[in-house]
Image (cartoon, rainbow, N blue to C red; front, side, top):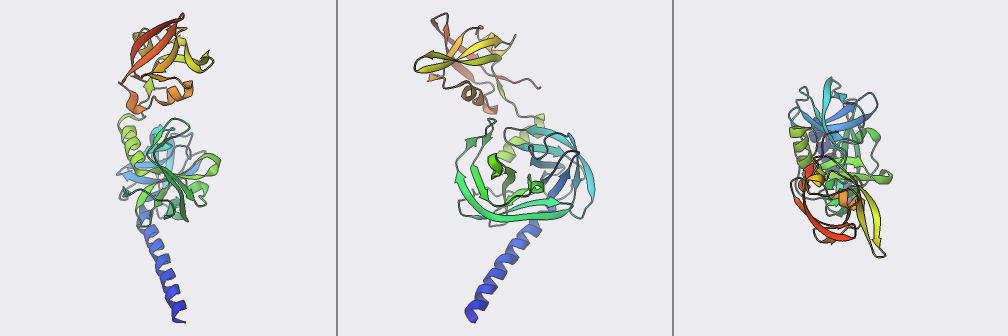
Length: 295
């Protein structure tokens, strides 16, 4: 009987600790409504709310539902679809910012996904099913760690936070391919949201070239230049239409998508050594990566 009581007491303490963690973090997590979608978000800095770009894909104006049900207006300040980070500006969100824990999540660790609906917490519990190194998303975004969760995330909870076993926020819960639940880590959110707050978008590398894959010989491929933007980086480097890029910084071109995916924010201003084939002759050029113009 004493063993049963002891086990029940431990379970009760564990359950109470999870509920306490949710209660402590919930004031900083908000429900977000637009004309076309519902999601969650959290206070990143005073007056600034982070959510999922995929969860709120269309509208530039939103309504935040604060804990307790009060609503305030917000506007999208910037988006980065490559990392799934969206930043909203809202003076009416006065809750203290969510505090992130820099410690990485580990496979097997218990976590809580915390979103909001109509001013109330929306909670799911589960495990970290996969914890891996930094990776690039399908859209080319740099994600600081690959974290997958084994839990059922409701649609309205996308863009909310993920709490670790210490009750601290480890990142943002989003849907990945095949509805897997992924975590956008705290380090990625800080880096991207800071750029969005300053510039309204993430800078991306720009070559000023239209490229098409072409087979150079039986064992290698290249990127044929189909067009050169006037006054773009490619034109400044002397690249011409019809040139074939066969190597970059001494590495053979494996595919055009991989070449373009390398043009992340850190690439702006870097100098690329490009090896070309021009009318059968080998040509070497230096190209300084520019910043992609705003759409």
